[in-house]
Length: 196
Ligand code: GRF
Image 1 (cartoon, rainbow, N blue to C red):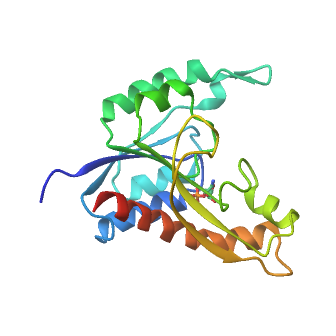
Image 2 (image 1 turned 180 degrees about the vertical axis):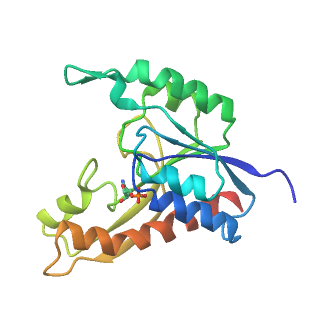
């Protein structure tokens, strides 16, 4: 077996996609990979305890400390983030429920190395509350997209998409719940495609 690809995951919260990826690696569904770190911008992210349970090293750079007068100082926040990323020497950086936009410098430092999952069939419904946007637009189906990260928000080239039907009584919550296991599968399959 050759050298393993070094994966860093960024998560802001629950971390179910992080778990799916970590367990996908352990179960051999994703080849040639190891997670060398989880980074969260929130010290209360559940993702951190999932990393701890799995003996994966984790780091917090608390983004709210860089917010003042309702303005987020992204460049200053991203300085320690960039240093940390560089020190982890990632082959891939996976955004998995990372709820902040990544700045230009980080994106340019890691060209073709950053991947995101978004809960819509991009290019439809970029940004926040994608499931709600799909519902409000009267769609009959929606889905998720795993894509390369470029400087435009939710804009980079698609790696893989999967679809779910929207049912007549769906709410944002019920639809998000139905989509979530599909997100997990799709992220794992996309990584398998890239790393095999
Ligand atoms: C997912 O729906 C993902 O697509 C998104 O935020 C959610 C994160 O869930 N943008 P989790 O933290 O991976 O459980």
